[in-house]
Amino acid sequence: MNAAIGGLSLQGLLLGSLPLGFSDAAALFLHFAALSLLAVGGAITTAPDMQRYLVSDQGWLSDAQFTASVALAQAAPGPNVLFIAVLGFNVGGLAGVAATLAGTLLPSSALTLAFGRFSRRNHEARLLRAFTAGLAPLTIGLLLSTSWVLLQPALQGAWQPALLLRQHPANTVALVALTLLVMLRTKASPLWLIAAGAAAGMLGWV
Amino acid sequence: MQTPIAAATDRCDPASPAELFRVFTALALQGFGGVLPVAQRMLVDRQRWLSREAFLELLSVSQILPGPNIVNLALIFGDRHFGWRGAAAAVLGILAAPLLLVLALALLAQQWRSQPLVADALRGMGIVAAGLVLSTACKLALALRANALGLPACAVLVTLTVLAVGVLRWPLVAVVLVLGGVALALAWWRLRREAGAARTAGTGPG
Image 1 (tube, chains in turn yellow, purple):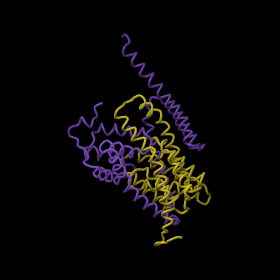
Image 2: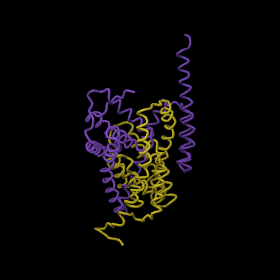
Image 3: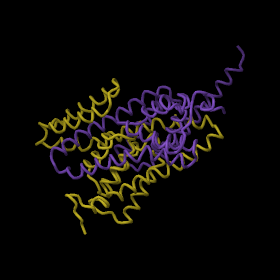
Image 4: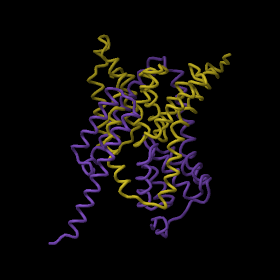
């Protein structure tokens, strides 16, 4: 039964808009746990696989919801990994947060603690260097893929003829280029860029 | 191995897990679009818990390991000082307060998502989010020039990763295991040959 409190439903908060069954929550946890150990270079590198799972395979989120989840987390203070909590929240409320966040953090944290204690006693420099050198190109490839996945809602919407005059794909490309320029050439906080993006969206430019 | 922490005399240690929690909460709440720069300022300059060298060493280990860099850094640092209690205090400090903030933001966005203005703002923010990820990829790509794999091999690996994960949308597990395995083996082999060449050059005549 829904207990509506000032327009918010308690059940919606705890379980999300489409309440996840136990097996769904377990599947969510397991999928994110499997990605946890692959997230070399940060959790954001595994975003393309999360999008494939949540949007394409399960249909729990739309493309637009997925991108908005990542954008919201970047607009808030704190580590970027919290975009995973927002994804979980939009899929299944607080139960979803618990599943995605625990799945993402537990395996990698266990490995980190074990490695931290091991490396205080041993120092295999060449293996570490091989790891860093070998995985760097993969990390870059995964970041490029993530960026591409995040752009999908903007590019899809923009090709509808009715929107073509207003939300032209060229404007989207220009906003990405501006972000790139500011981030690479200045020390400005990304918060200003997120605010500029919100303004550009509200004005109907992108 | 002499750790820089032990070597520096003007450094101090955190007094308790509670202090770890407080300092990591403070630094997490100051970090918009990434906590690492703030972490360096807090831990090295203000609290003087780490020397610059010790921070960089901790950071590079945190980056090699899977999982969010800042969470890994907090885990290892906390564990060094107070064992698992320190690790838990530091990680909760990094995550707890920002998690509450970002979930409040996500809840607001969920309630107002159907408003056209909010949907437009979120779309614009999503484009900037894609640009931010792209800028991280570009910054990392600059470091590839010094990569032991060599630039051509790096370029091939980046392209194959984008193709497999971004375009063909293959499962990440398979891609990372295959491509990552090849890259690691290649890096290991190159580093060993490099070390071998340096040894011959060092002991050879002339």
